[in-house]
Amino acid sequence: MNLKMAWFHGAANTLLDLLFPPRCLKCGLFIDGKSGYDFTGPNHKDFPGESDPTLPGDAEPKIPGESDPTLPGDSDPTLPGDALPKVPGDSDQPLPRDAEPKIPGETKLDTLVNPHEIFATIKSRYCSFCMAGFSGNIHSSDSPGPFAGTITHPLYSEDQNFKGLIIPSPHSSPLGKILAVTMYDGIFRESIHLLKYGGKRVLAKPLGQLLFSVFMKNRAFHDIDYIIPIPLYRARMVKRGFNQSYLIIRDFEKWWYSVKGNKPLWKVDYRLLVRRKNTKTQTGFTKKERLNNMLNAFSPADSGKLEGRRVLLVDDVHTTGATSSEAARVLGESGVVSVNLLVLAVA
Image (cartoon, rainbow, N blue to C red):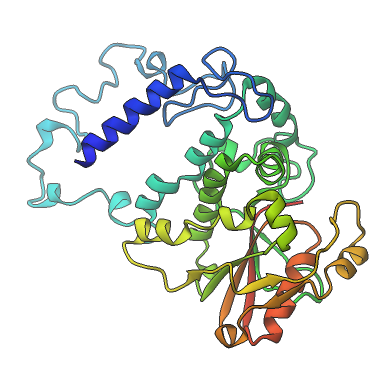
């Protein structure tokens, strides 16, 4: 039944793509093989025309048969002719790299929420013209922050050890550790902006999966009791229709179960922290103005439920830390013993 449903959904999506071709989320142009990017395979490249080592032409040896692993007598352990191993019982054992993943559940994690595959999904929602504009920022060797002096962003280079960024907490802030996916630049800046202000909720899931993959690969952030999104003031929530910080984490428990096979020891709960003050937008404010603007903006919904607990706050962008620091201060006064922060990007 599951295979039939999978086939049905695949056929339905193909039909919908034919009837309603996808459009670029930024400019609205149709995305097809000519104007957009085609990421139908796992070995996608960032820009059209780049040489792909997985192309059929690159797989052919220069001299026929010289390095062909399928020749008789070859010592490749995966060949059919080597079904009878030299050491009895050895063929029943998987290769060491498959038998001992670095992190429990990592193999399943790479299949479910591989950051590079998710990043490709995000890129595929933009046309080639818009992507060209994004690339100037994220590939720049002059860009500030942890990637200064580098040409390629880890997500572009498909760095298999990509685990996000650990950011020091602001001076005298009650925040503990801060973990971010990347810098607030290029395609990430545009995607967060379109989700937050453009109502492009379709970006919430891939952005959330990127955040989850980074969260999973940093075990120091797993010792928590609650994951709480930074709340919006009620009037702003009604106007926007959603809280983007909650949208990107609402499936964390489900994804954890899919990867680990058991329920997490923590819960996602957006009701534990309330925004009481209708603060002004922080854009253009100095650090001091931001702190004053956020003072007494939050209050706990249930102090008894928070006492003695460990909390992981979630926000979309970390700038000066005024918002998250004020939320952490209020949670600390309610008895929370530790507050860390998880964000999509650092400005």
